Image 1 (cartoon, rainbow, N blue to C red):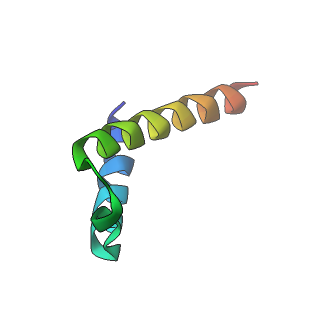
Image 2: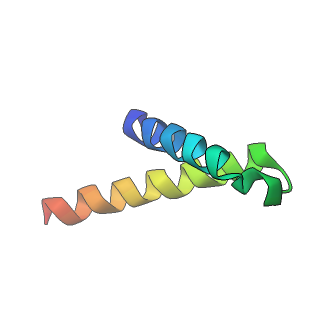
Length: 51
């Protein structure tokens, strides 16, 4: 979960510099959804690496 938080923080900074948050209706919900996606991808990656 910590790794997902760190990746999400990096993505947040990158998207903020690119100006992507101008097109987002609710940045807090967007960040929460982005964190969920990153966490899910990391769990999926870890499961794939174990098999």
